[in-house]
Image 1 (cartoon, rainbow, N blue to C red):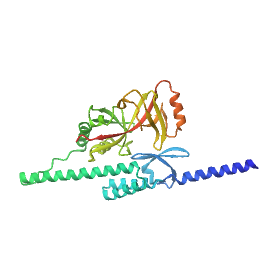
Image 2: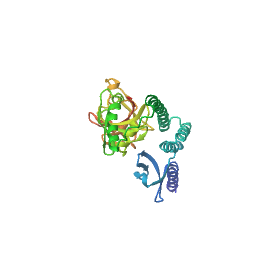
Image 3: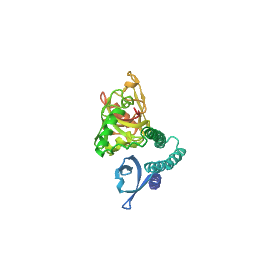
Length: 316
């Protein structure tokens, strides 16, 4: 009898936990009428990765009717991003600010607001310069000088590749759907930001770059008039774990202490680096104890895939 009561209580607790998890999950409404619940762990340009009790599922955005995040601030940022893409900047400002009132530390909202402020400032300055040049041309020639011949799409693309190298010091290529650094110029803004050959530009202004075209990435880095570019790089490193300590934060397995004989700028791993995988094993759902055991059990060096914030100050 006691065993039956215990099993019944255990069943009730399990059901309640499942109900709570489902009620607090992100909701995806598909165009075919299905409704899925889980946590959106990756949000790319054309797809999302939804994590649920059954595992991870990749969903194409073309198949999604609507996506509702559990956190209100995430929904507000989504609305802000949509307004920004429509050039409805006043509405975007309002939504970003509303999100920050709910969660002042929300990185996506902060990044969106900073980007928008920089964009509008540089746009205003650019318009002022255009107006000055127009006035100078009228005073000098008595008329407005005709605009230069419009470039073809191919010419624009080649020009962006050249500007990325000249202004920022980067050459990029798409590898397996992600932008990889093929070359970085010494003493360039990109090099000063800590970006090196072989790095992946994983995100720009908190937006994942996976499955974006090279043209879209170039536009995001060059054609948006902001003084700086906030990005996240992904890098594979192999190093000794000696002097390293780790913790599990909201953003994932994190380097909480990087002590070693090398100077901080020469250390392979740094404080606040996010560990994406250890010896090829993803860390997304890995408990800290297992991660430490995996690191400790490695012979000599450990192969880490890390993500790190990088701030590029434009060279123009």
